[in-house]
Length: 211
Image (cartoon, rainbow, N blue to C red; front, top):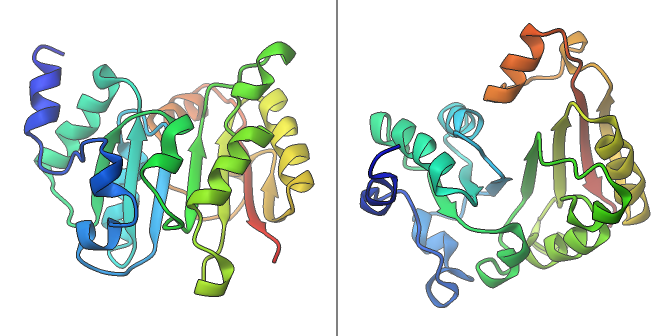
């Protein structure tokens, strides 16, 4: 999109990546102590925007590394601002620099599957990423849930996620190899709507870290 960078910079709901002002200060940014849910790789923002609209007592943050994609989410926020939604342009590898045990739930919707074994470390449910999440999740003693919710059409990624989450101390509250056939409440992403129209089955997990 033309002028994408300027559109992003001018949006008051886009938070600049600055560890000194963000880490440990998200309650001040939102102006309340409500739980914070994070979507990593939010794409064009349909999911996170609708989730924030439907759940005003939860704060939502959408992370997207590509400005060319993030600008589409900015358009949605500019058209319908929501006080409990913020957007960030950045990388999952750096989450520990901007959060200090402040996140209750992470959404991983149709993440890059990195299907080749040599790229397994890049998957967002690989052990190295799960270690990063430990440092941003709210501790259980403060009422944190440490919950990860994933949707993907890729069985290699899904199988890898099940193994890694289990090994990392998570248990699965909900699992499905065909989300559309269940009664699990669901807000669709742009990808998901496209896949459903093509008859692609969606894999789903809702995992919580054991105490």
